[in-house]
Length: 140
Image (cartoon, rainbow, N blue to C red; front, side, top):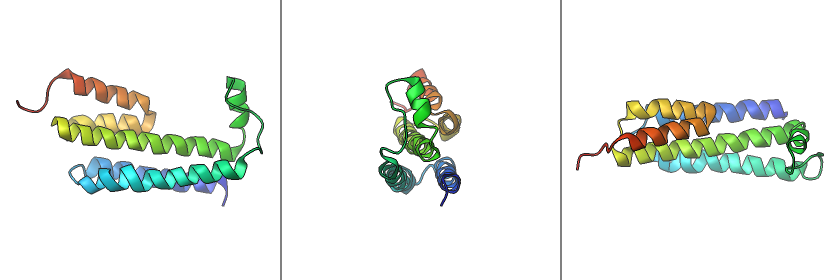
């Protein structure tokens, strides 16, 4: 399988996971099992397999930006970096949804945060933190 094919499969799995977060927010099995355990575990295994298979095969490193660019010139290592993003963004989205449920934040207010987290990771998390801090949502 080529890096492009694996990329396509990983993106499809991530997209389906995000759709379940948005469409099935009241189902704890979504955040507790699918988007917090199963899919991130699959991504973690894929990430690890890529790293092991490519260890020592690519120039570059993490000490300079130029080194990172050189490292990511290898399509497999670029894919590993992308899978890393997919896994951690999904974990953050799962946390946002669970936390919103605990904070009684209406789901329709959380959806833009989830979409932004899916597309732009930290920007979505930052928006969620702002939404969360605006006011107490649960009645006291």
